[in-house]
Length: 109
Image (cartoon, rainbow, N blue to C red; front, side, top):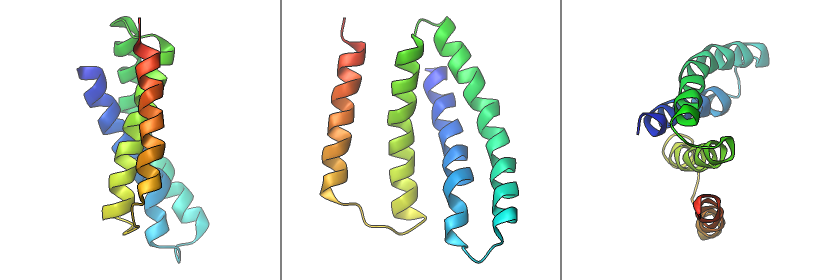
């Protein structure tokens, strides 16, 4: 559970680091890069322990990666809709469904 909470929190930071500057495209690129790097530091402070705890706790590296990708898509989708005000199309839902199939097969014994 700690792994999932840390992955979720790190992905919130990651999403802001990578995409928040899109709300203010008038900001000079060098400032956007520095701001993103500053935010990304906190992502790494959460992501590294999440992966370490998950790996020691029994997840394989492949399982950790697929969990991280699903968490990333959920966090990014909420960010895109609520912060960037983009529309969510049904085809995104279908694509996510296929990714959830990937998760199923990753964890299938």
